[in-house]
Amino acid sequence: MPSSFNMDNLPFSLLDEREQALLRQTLDIGYFQKDEVIMQAGSVPEGVYVVLKGKVSESEVHAGEADRQEHIYVHYENEDYFGAWSAIKGNAIHNFIAEVETICHIIPTKTVLDLVSTNSSFADYFQQNLVAKAEIVEQHGDSQDMAEFMLAQVGEGVMRAPLIVDEASTIKATTVMMREKKVDCVLVKKGTRYGMVTGTDLLNAVVLNECSIDTAVAEIATYRLISVHPNDYLFNALIIMTQQQIERVVVMRENELMGIVDLTDVLSFFSSHSHVIGLRIERAKTLEDLHTAAHGLNDLIKSLVSQGVKARFAMDLLAAMNGRIMAKLFDLMVPADMQPHVCLIVMGSEGRGEQVMKTDQDNAIIYRDGLAWKDMQEVMNSFSKQLMEFGYPPCPGNIMVSNPEWVNSLGDWTQKMSSWSVSWAEQDQMNLAIAVDAKPVAGNPALFKAARNWFFKSLKNNDAFFSNFAKVALEFSTPLTFFGNLKDRGQLDVKKGGIFPIVHGVRTMALEHKILVTNTFKRLEALVEVGAMTDKHSKDLAEALGLFIQLRLRQQIKRAEEEEAGVDLTPNTLDLQSMNKMERDLLRDAFHIVKGFKKHLELHYHLGSR
Image (cartoon, rainbow, N blue to C red; front, top):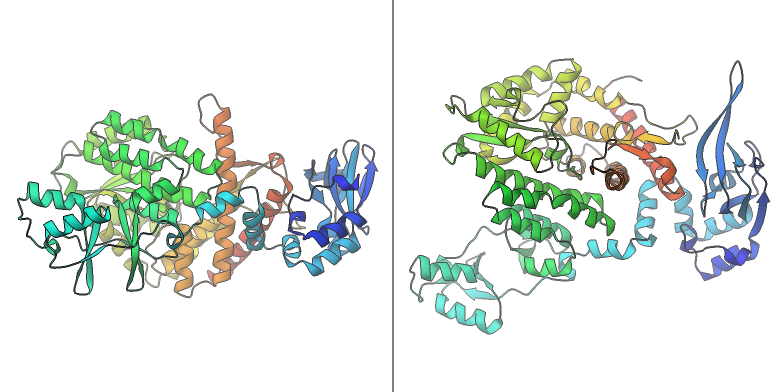
């Protein structure tokens, strides 16, 4: 029977051949009847148990005044392991009971300790270190190949050597050279700057602008180039091209030109069909065209997640796509002469770029003081209605442009922000939290920037505001028991327990340090740059938030597929019973990070214990 032990599962797949041989030599087997106690709280465990067949509960008995109540934390089934922490520490803190007839492999405590002492990765897996565990899972988990695929860097794969011409090169000479080299763009060096000329630029210059073929290409080149670093993720280059609506980026290391990355090369590298949706958005001439493109987004996200793409990458790409859809809809619906005088902003998770599956709308309009546009509210009503038809649900709190409360002149918007910032009312605090995550997606962004800059100035040295604002991050309890385990009731609200405390706490610190980016992951990086947070703390919080989002997304997709209407009615609920031991361990470790962060907020903003 010991020979049937599966070494392919974590953490046992981390062992080398010699270590696996040691484990097999000392492996024992245990048979347990229904309701038999396998390990009792306070006892010295025999070792680590791996369920071969059956079901085991981990529980604690609470002695009440009237009776003794047993609280079950978690169940272990096929190939789950339990008792590792107890074996390493020397005694069990909970009871482990066979709920049905059960067979377990038993790895003796001595063997476990020997392996922990000789294999650092194996030891790390049993420590409460979320980042270490997540790295191990990425390197050795089922999605290893896809993870490596998605983490490919710009300089590793599709970067092309640039074709560079002198600034005096003519249109004719450049065209001949491009044809010989079989490329569709060149870089023109003009002094210390580089400009880009594409085949389309050459065609437009000669046919539309009637330039002579002897014209220097330096005169028609574009010098505002978007660049990436060779160590950037290739997937990020795809996101940048999607956001900027361009087909090429140049690769620069400091001031040194390294190469060019072309959209067609990136798309051939990735199996995602995101470019198809992007092209549909750009080519949309009618609302019906845009409707078709918008309805492809959920399928795109499902495809990415099923292939093992990290939620953060998926969020970045979806944020870019959503922004383009809303901007295109704005262009189709708002008269051209009005567009310079209004700004469409998205807020909340959409503003932070942390929306994955389409959630409710959170948007607003800021318009120029004194603007006379009698049809504005009618157009905004139609705008919200169209977004609903595109698959963006209405906001339960009615925070969208169809509500006149969220269509404001610049002066009125800044006044509202000011009123919310001095109010202790829960709704005002919620409105402010949503509004400070805003970003412009269409119209004139200068209106948004004017409001944001004014608000930052109004917060200078306002300790009372930050203390009051930070309190909201502590409103929901962290779902951990006194002993540091998950409070397992089968269902867990991951937004209240994990996502919101991180997002709001980081949001508060970002406001305090006048950080302009709104994405929580980027805010964490910026907090490190200004010295407000250590690199380790930032990475721990980013890893925890990424895990919460990934687990929530996977269950959202699963439940949405099971619903006839395709709508998940419990978007923030995790079903712990459907998660394996590894996922529950990672989740528990992530909640410990949240608990520590909340303590940090209490101390930093002098909130006292809550």
